[in-house]
Length: 109
Image (cartoon, rainbow, N blue to C red; front, side, top):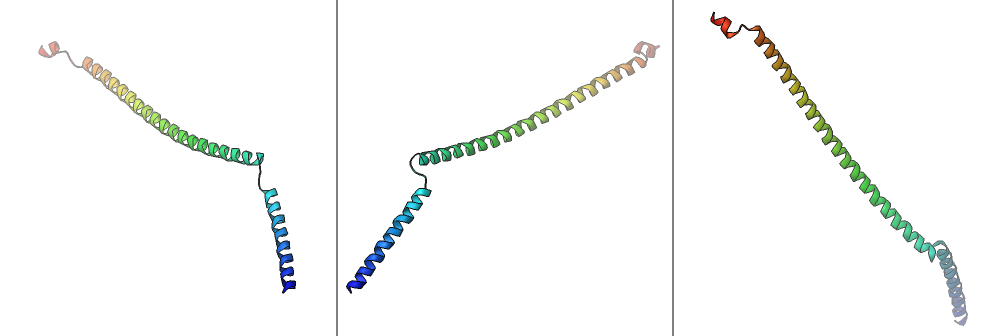
């Protein structure tokens, strides 16, 4: 029984040593101290970049909406100008036709 206990103690010691070695390797791979602060700063910067990208998308959407509204306003203004020009042209045509009509005094004779 004592031999088994000694063998199990040696095995436990070996396993404990391997566990510490594995933990040391893990600790080397993980950021520590200043690296942790740098990683936190990187995450904060990534979050800011993400927020800025979202704001840019919102601004682009607003810009597109403003451009659409501006284009619609231009089309309406242009249509109004065409209508005014057509009315002016019609008015001139009517005035020219009035000159061609005999005057009321000539019709009376």
